[in-house]
Length: 354
Image (cartoon, rainbow, N blue to C red; front, side, top):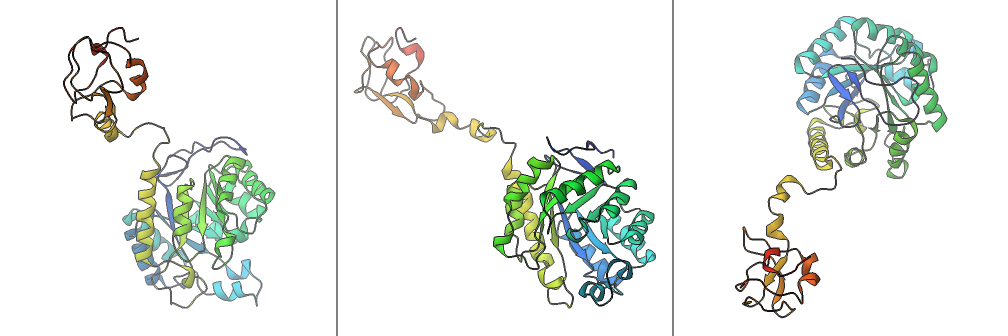
């Protein structure tokens, strides 16, 4: 599917672009990503169970982290220890991609280094996720863009101009579509650090699809982000929060993830199209709910309308009279016909009604 994005864009209306068979952007269903990362610990069977559970929970995509620890981290760092020996080989990755395809879910990854990016491309993954820690790695972003891959960029740790540079780098080197996610790169992220309003500021500033990548411990921030216009939601995912590993304790288990996705889908319906008009079902009952001019007592032909004989009431079903806005215009006018008690007063019942 061809992207509809505009390269070099830094402001204006956000445009949609494709990842696999899904369009990302305003007016499209929220793209919900289950962030598995390396929660699979390099265990193919565990990764498969996570992909199956994510699909069953309503996720649109599963995102892994593809990292060569020796290329990405200096030995002795926490990250080097965390990512060492947790990668899936090409055969396993192909197996996971085939599984995701059968389940109708998109599988893609964050490449931590050039070698990992090359692996993703050889395997045919449809998009690149740029993590907050990679967001200032312009050489990697440029290379991913040159490979023709759409990109979702998290913006934790970043200043506005750093985000602008990452977007420009991706667009100028050929990425067919870019989205940015408001993110706080703390694990877990306290409420006072989330700044969801920053997501809307990024939408206005950069003119591309925006979303939210979450590191809180429940779904409130994700649901709120959708209400504020997020087009992408990313949430860490695990089968068991008590498993060993850096990300499990901030991840959401399948039951909670499923509930979150249901809330996102419901919110998307609630948001509507923004037009200030009655809902179609309201149109059918407007006449029954609004007040109209009603005879407070029997009115004979030739009687003068007054506050004593004209009331404002909800009519019987199927009946309708002049609206309340006509009240002052009717008072002092003459009845053309007789009007029974509690019957609506229509325009034809009033002599010389302008």
